[in-house]
Image (cartoon, rainbow, N blue to C red; front, side, top):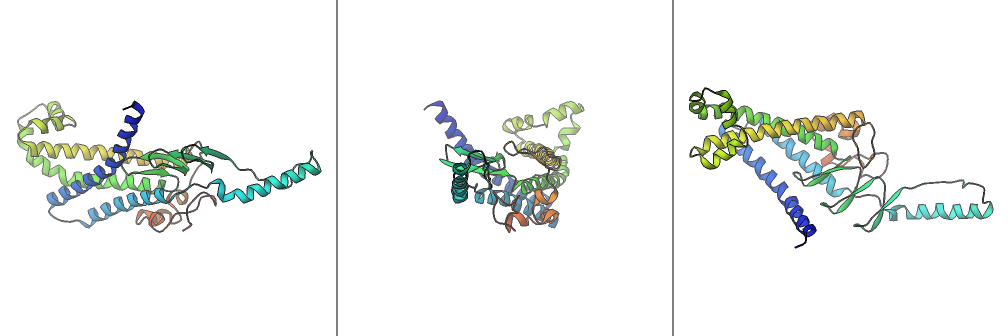
Length: 288
């Protein structure tokens, strides 16, 4: 098998498995948290619902987003060209009275001309306007249209991990207390129960339940830090104009980031479930 074909096959497998692994992992963490807590907390249910709703919103907007093709404005473009030719025949030195410019780029994989700014995603196999990146864990592309939902997903994921850590921490300490007391060197304690050493000990140790708890704890702590930092970084870039969509930058206010409903999307992602807001009157999905 050629190397390029092998890479494409691996990426295809990763694309299909990552969202499924993410979903199964979240369900597992939810089940462990409820089992240890011995009750279903309304706060935990709210956080979990927000994670899944914003995940669905990101995926839904990514699937429905279609770039503006040349066919949609072909008639307008032809009329402009015809008018320019007529004016040039009358007076070659006179500029046309109606000058409308369009910027296009040709996508070789879609075999079509698209209005800029557009970028093709090899994983979704289509073009997107104002694309940021493709998220393997969510199985969708992060665009300007769903950036607010992606930021909320990162924040609510970090909060959900924090809640699970608060439940898992005391329970884990009770189970490994005998190991902690027997080792006075706190540096060794950190090494023995730090990821990925905890995972290695899980495979070799007979006391697998304790090491499993530590591994889950370390994994949740890592996810919490990554999602929180990444969400704050994306929000800061959007507000300060450093966020780049296919070489296009510009400051965005909270309404442009989170949609027509603004900060009310924090409670419920209206813009992702009800519809999406229109940006600059073009290139977007239906208005809310």
